[in-house]
Amino acid sequence: MVFVLVHSPLVGPGTWSPVARELERRGRQAIVPSLVEPAVAPPPRWRHHVEAVRDAVQTLSDPLVLVGHSGGGLLLPVIADAVAPPVSGLIFVDSGVPASTGETPTAPPALLDHLRTLAVDGMLPPWSTWWGEDAMRDLVPEEALRTALVREMPSLPLAYFEQRLPSPAGWERRPCAYLLLSDAYREASAEAMERGWRVEEITGAQHLHLAVAPEAVTDALIRLAVA
View 1 (spheres, helix red, strand yellow):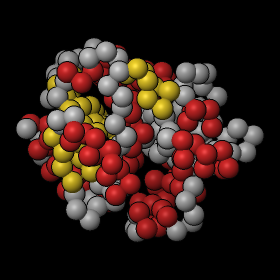
View 2 (tube, rainbow, N blue to C red):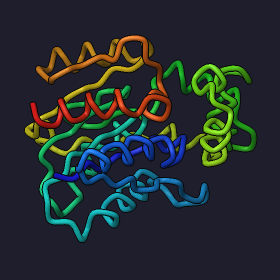
View 3 (cartoon, rainbow, N blue to C red):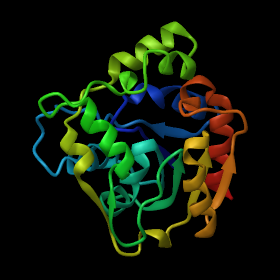
């Protein structure tokens, strides 16, 4: 079993790197595909993220556990449909819950309205600036780690958040689970529970807990992957 840790397109692979190291320390295999791409990539831009994951796992034969954080979670159904190795489960971490069928908006209407106020010539500033200068400090108190994470964050086009992501037919036939980190995704975790998914919460965590407290997140992923 290989944990494939999919980061949000708003950040970089460094958000998952501490968990990958912790999984490997415990004898599990983990890979973190990079979804950082040029902002000029042609639409539909979600395809480039799917291709990045597919390329990263193409030589593997063991079953995959796809784990998506935040915006990376919305990509899991279409990634599961595209990769060659068998997918034994999907774990959504502080993420929206994709539609069972049809399409899923990349951003909810309220967030999209906020992003339109931030865009300049169709481009958004890095995610670290969206909620004020203190937001990242609260999420990642350690300065060196915070600096490294911010350095990876791309500037994405507003159009990325105006696209809709497909939900391939039958994607929920694979076992699905949800790990809640922050109150912002409590409604999503409730929807996951209504769908019959396994749901866990790390009490007192926050959205970037995977980078700040990788041991606790790793514990939860291992439980959710084997339950």
